[in-house]
Structures are given as C-alpha cells and as structure tokens.
Length: 130
Image (cartoon, rainbow, N blue to C red; front, top):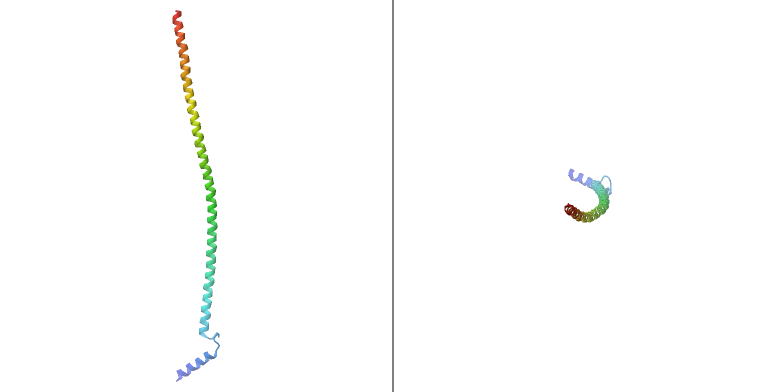
C-alpha cells in the first residue's frame, strides 16, 4: 500500500508538472539529445566547410600546376625547335664542308698535274739541250 500511494503521489506530481518543465527527466533528456544533435550538426557543418575549402585549395594548386606544365611545355617545344634547327644547320654545314674538301682535293690534283707537266717539260728541254 505504501508503495502504491508513493507511486500515485509521484505520478500525480509529474502529471501536474508541465511537459517542458526542467524538473521533468524526459524533457531534460530530450534537451540533452537535441543539444548533442545540434553540436554534431555544427561539427559536421564546420567539417564540410573545411573539406570544401581544402578541395578548392587543391583545385587552385592543380590549376597552378597546369599553368606551370603548359609553360614548361612551351619551353620544351622551343628547345625541340632549336634542336631541329641546329640539326639542319649542322647538316648544311657538313654538306658545305664536304663540298669544300672535294674542291680542295680536286684543286690539289690539278696543281700536282700542272707542276708535274712543267717539271717533265723542263727535264725534256734540259735533256735536249745537252
């Protein structure tokens, strides 16, 4: 009986209290849960903002890297063009050098023939003169 009367007394006290009263344990639990949910949502929002900021920073870095790569690509293209041009100059200079060597060789042969002719002619005149 005492237990039942106590339960009746407690239940009537809780029934008489408003549902959103601070003394109501279920209300306090709901408030705590609501506050935890709010804290989690704020953390999640701040985490999402940080992640989106980091993603945008990574995007900016990738854009800068792309710019640097394109600039280096232009430099490499210029270097390749200069190498091709120097190869052409080298080929043409080798051709001119070969022509010059051929010219010198043919001139040398002609000079040797010329001097041999005059030496032989001088020897023949010297022999007939004697």
